[in-house]
Image 1 (tube, helix red, strand yellow):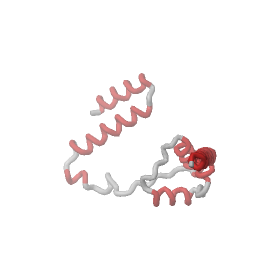
Image 2 (image 1 turned 135 degrees about the horizontal axis):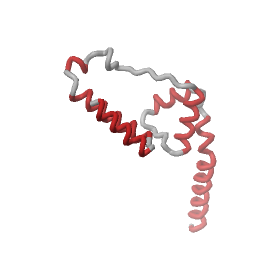
Image 3 (image 1 turned 90 degrees about the horizontal axis):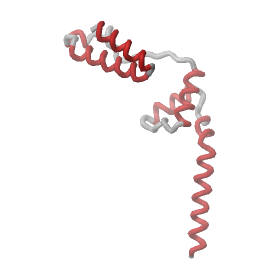
Image 4 (image 1 turned 30 degrees about the vertical axis):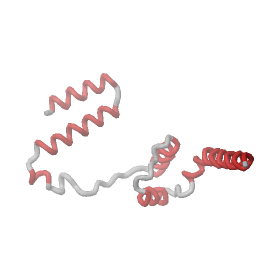
Length: 121
C-alpha cells in the first residue's frame, strides 16, 4: 500500500496538479477505510470522529467566500448554515454588494421589458 501511495505521489508531482492528487488520495484512503479495516475498527470514534473541527483564519475564510460568490459557486444548498457562517464572519450584507451591478442590470432589463409591453398595447 505504501508503494502504491508513493507511486501515486510521484505521478502526481509530474503532472503538477495538486487538486487531482488530493482527490485521488482521498479516494484511496476511503477505499482503504472501507475495505481493509475490520468493522469494529471502523466504529472506533478515536479514529473516525463524528465531528471534525477545522480552524481557519477569518480573513482567509472571507476571501474564499467572496471568491465563491463572484464565481457563482456559492449555492443555496443549506441556507441556514450559510447564513450563520456569513453572520459569524461579519459578512451579512457584504455578499450582496458584489451582486449589485448584476442585479441593477436585471432590474433595468425587467423595467425595459415592461415599458416595451405597455407600448404594444
